[in-house]
Image (cartoon, rainbow, N blue to C red; front, top):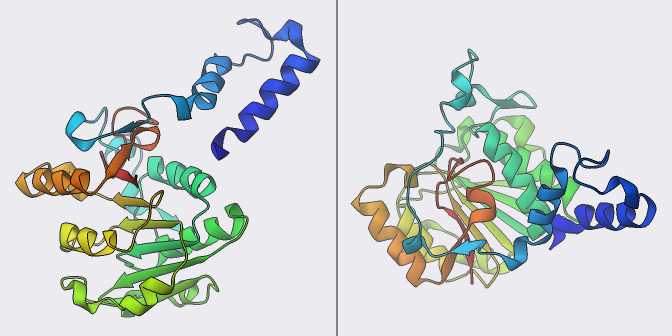
Amino acid sequence: MKLALGYQAFWEAAHKNYPDQLRPDGLLDQGGMFRVINNVLNADHSDRFAKPSERLWRWSINPWIADTRFTKVGALGKTYRGLILLKTPFDLALYPRLIWELQPRTILELGSYQGGSGLWFADNMSVLCENPGEVHSFDLHTKCVHETARKHPLLTFHQVDLSNVANFDVDLLMSLPHPWLVIDDAHVQIFPVFSYLNKLLVSGDYYVIEDDPARVNREIIDGFQLVEESGFLIDTYYTDAFGNNVTCAPNAWLRKS
């Protein structure tokens, strides 16, 4: 597990060099850190992955309103390098962890807005990936994309009407290397788009559906039955990192099995 490398290295160095400080109240156990280390080291041997039908839809707190209680801005006022970045603070912490763990060669972003999130993903990929790939962002309203985002060498914007999957350039998609990380933040025909892209995904690829799952209506329930039937599991390491479903993608950090 790539996420555990730093924890494993610390654990081994501490045991070797400072055995007397490894007791629960020792100087190296900062605020119960040893329990956290064990949880990370054992993450691949736990019930990390779950079927959608096994999960409830409730969340511990609503991530979109959590930081409006004590600030004037909140998640909708986030910016990155001066551009609008529509991500909650929890998800801003989660995506770099997944990018580091997955080492995606391709990130597909559905919904570009001003290009701030695409730029953020491209910068994260350039820093966190040992072999950086490309970010491809798809939106109908690409004239809103800022020039700053367009200049990034790993980031390409595509004007596509996502209401019809036939508008995708299948030759482009088939040429893109795996692993893939797909982020649906477009809120347009989410399950027809999922079904289309699923045909191109391989085992180990990730698909994150932002915002829409929080509605938990008949479309979402039926859609997640399709998700489960397509062989996807919920990665609870991400959905529950800060509490049950404290993310803009509740039950929707999905890994293809």
